[in-house]
Length: 231
Image: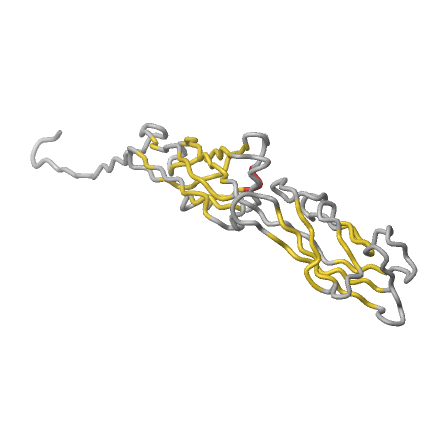
C-alpha cells in the first residue's frame, strides 16, 4: 500500500492432487477352470483380471500360493505372467494325487494397493497310457524254463499298474516266431516257454516286442518296448 501508483505482481499456484493409496476399491474376482491331467507344460490354466475405481492402474499380478486338495503346497506347478495375469502350467498334473488346486494371486495397483483372488482349477481325469521301456539282457544258453529273463513294469508306477492304477496285460507281439518265449500276462515276466531251449550257435540274439495294455473302460491305451536277449 502506497500513495501514488500501486505496483502489482502475479504468480501461478499449481495444486497436484496426490492419489491416496487404497482410496479406490479394487475389483478382483475369483475364477474357476479345468484342465485335463495330461495337459502339456505351458498350457494356459486361466487368466486373472482386475480393475480399480480411482485413477490408479493395475501394475502387476503375482502368484502368492497354490494348494491341491490333498497336497498342501503345489505352487511349483504354476506360474503367472505379471502383466497379463495369465496363469500357466509349469508342472505335471495328476488326478490321482490332486483332483483340484486353489491358486491364490495378488494384484497390485500403481499406488501400492493390493488384493488377493483365487483361481480354482479342477483336474479332469483321463486314461493315461502305460509306459514300459526297452531292455537289453544277457543270458546263458542253458537257462531253465523257470529262469526269469526280464520283468517288465510300468516305469511311472514301478509295478504292473499304470499311472492311473489300472492293471496291465502283457503280450509278445513280435520276434517270437519260433515260440521260444512266453510272458506272464499279469506280471510281465519273460521266460522260456515249456520244453524250449536257447542255442547260441543257431541264434545268438533275440529281439522281442512287448506290449502293455491297460485294463480300462473305453479306449484301451497301450505301449510297446523292445527286449533284446543276448545269448
